[in-house]
Amino acid sequence: MHGLELHTFLPFLQCVSGILKNYTSTGNYIAVVNSEYNFDIPVVRIQGSHIKLTSFMYRKFDFYVIDLDKTNIAQFLQIFHEDGNFHAGNKFLCIGRNISSNILESLSYYYIVNAIFLDSYSGILKTFFPFEKANLHKVNTNLQVIGKCSDTSRLDQNNLFPNKLPEKWTNSTITFCQTSIEPLAFVDDKKKGIGTEIYRLILKTIGATPNRTMIEFDNSNRRQEFIKQIFISRTCDFYVAGYPDKFFELTIPYYIDGMYWFVPSPAMNKNYNFIFGIFSTSVWLVWLASILCIAWCWYVPSHSNRKGQGLFFEEVLLCVKLVLEQTVKLRILRKTNFILYTIIIFSTFMMGNIYKGRIVYVLSGIHYEESILNEEGIMKHNIKPGLFPIHMKWFRDERKFFDYMNNNYQICKMDTTCEDIAAVERNIAVLRSQIIMQYRNKDYIGEDGRLQLIRLPNPTMIVHFMCFFLPGQSVFPQINQYTHYLLQNGIISKIISKYSLKIPAQNRKFYRRVLTMQLLKWLFVLWLVGLIASCVIFTLEITRSLA
Image (tube, rainbow, N blue to C red; front, side):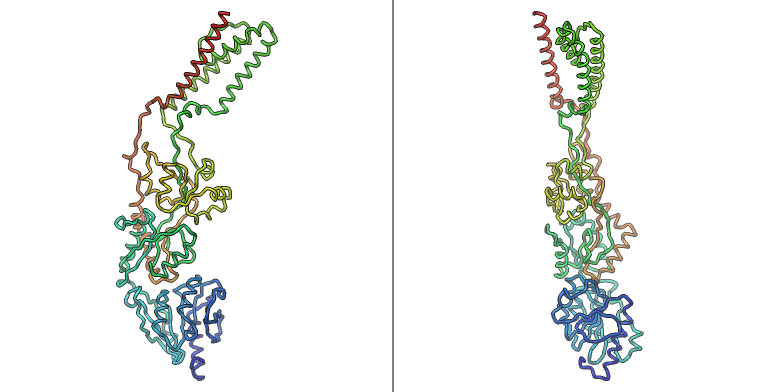
């Protein structure tokens, strides 16, 4: 009976039950650790000196009753913290005879302030104020008496769990971690960054001395474990980052953005496309098919007439000359000849004028290849998706693109290596948030003033930029509150606008379109083909006349 005399045990049990009734409500989850006391309210019992994770139900408890004489409190808190079933803001009633400073330091290490201590022998209730000196890392371990179980009326009147957090953390150096992702954070501390500016301002407002530590993730999927370890090791007190994680406690988003694919901008058309790309394949086929059809309709009646057969090749040569827009001497012997010549002249005139007008337009302007508009375009152009492997889970619903990505993706860290490859080699699409690329775009402007990387219209995911804390971390409420204040008053928007760099107009260059030999060489090839065809026809005519 924990050394309690029989006549004091009943008041002691009533005291504990009264605390539970006063500071819990219906639906609260109460954990009783290594204690055999029976209470008249539902509780979950956790027994054993070696606590195993499999014995826990996967839900955070609201109130803990812990027998300190049978529990290694440091081990218990570590296991609960690692399992994710823990929030430092919950209430703790610790029962024991010897409440040492080590126990208080273990509680403070996990930012537990809502703890009261019941001496199992005397029935005296005590508490501690770890941050009485406004120092987050150097806690006060002095216990203060707040009541006695025998004086139930006083216990009912007093608030056993008052607010123990200071208004200002004037004696604290609070460290936040960031990953180097420009413009959210720069390695060079003088350049600051969006997140750096915001949370330095907030920490100074709450009286703390801000300190920043840069960290870098590897490419594995163990991001959550990595952040947990830097918190446990006290590398930093909170982490300024993007997209949320369910294990941590999160501030409201200081910025909401979208993750987009950034693909190479359309390249200038190849020179041969200036000529052969004017008409589509279907137009060429329809035109040639119509001429062949008409020629066939003309040839059949001519072939049935032996006299017409002798003139057939001569008529074919005339048709070819008409197509090439050469002068000819027409001998209209039959109505079919007249119809054929008329159709060829008008079709050649129509196609020739369209072609000439179009080629002048093409050669006098700058024209580009087809733009990539979606994931289908990425696959069609055989472009590798560049992203972190942990981002691939976002595309599982798009089965076709997900399979393509599995076979072709390239790992892209948060530096600019992949953007450089995409802009120069033009074989990678990079997954980035819009705010990052708005800042980096100034480095990816071509000689013609165009952006070398363009954004696809639809975001793949909406990203919330926020801060991560251990659940119940003591500075979280104030930092979250001041983040809200800065958002409401437009201060965060003003900070972000400093880093959303626009492309300066003077960087854009526009050129006259001078027709160089490089552009016109394919025209000369066509001219040479026409010259050879004309010479062949001329030779055939001379040969026939001499014969």
